[in-house]
Length: 426
Image 1 (cartoon, one colour):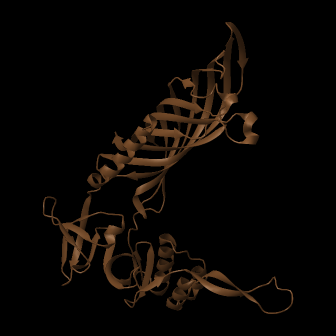
Image 2 (cartoon, helix red, strand yellow):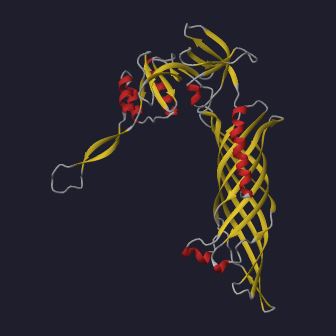
Image 3 (cartoon, rainbow, N blue to C red):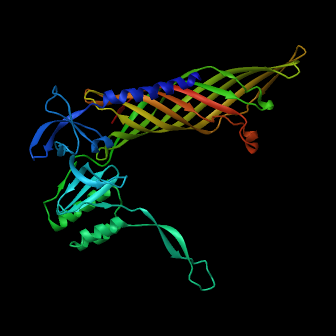
């Protein structure tokens, strides 16, 4: 196994085995029994499709856990947060099934969500799904020049959601233009249904999760201590001096700005982390090889002086916790070289005669991408939001001699970087 890949595998294993243990979060809530009785207690908070299948409940912290299905209770929810009701819908198998559906807006027109599907019901009437599936249709072929009416088969949007909303909202004419512009997304539909309810019955509508914001951006500053190694290989004879060149591991600092973007209204635990880091660093390396005839020995000493700007973007999953919140990152890095100075001192020994040459050939790409993963934690210290993270980054296709760009890549280069990052949010 390639040793540089070990940190990546370690991170993935941590992700797989840590999720069940960190996701045990119970929040104050309630269940509504089939008889109509409401019982207060603690509900397991989940943001995946399992929340539509069952509800895990306990009366107090140390009480026994009970799992309820839609056949056992009629509703459950969290205090000042989500509300879930039992509804009958058509599943992907085509059969009607009782499921837990999240109630987003309650009023003259109520809006529900089940997985990635949306439903509406007016005055507690029948549930209707909002969809915009692609359907086959026929349109006139405008390329026909002989005047005959010929048609071609195309895929067209059904716009079924527009038809249903126009029918249900026809008692508020001001909604017609808004309906035409609506998207099948939670935010767009919540705003539309809320506007309609305020039009026909002001003050009667209930908007759930209202205290949660649609978008939160947390800017910050971070510094990192990095350990990086580069690897080169080439099957092209002209570049045998690059093949398996050994470069020393370099330790260098970097610093930059970070921004965490989250939508608690949609997903509390998932966010997007974007970063920009500046660093200045250098490498020294060595390679040697022998000609096919065995009469010529080639030795090369390398020195590189680099500065770069590295842009990272990653999906972050934050595990629930009170004091220290662990998280994992998986993302893509893009490094841009701002400056690059290279020197290769070549010694060619033939028949005990040594010839020395200096070369300034640059073999690193001005821009290259990579993939990375990391584990870290958010925590507060004297009311200051801090974070720290251990990250592994694998740079891909970092090398390509300029003189061979016209014939394709013949020099393979990778980098391996382990970083210890620490920072704070403003």
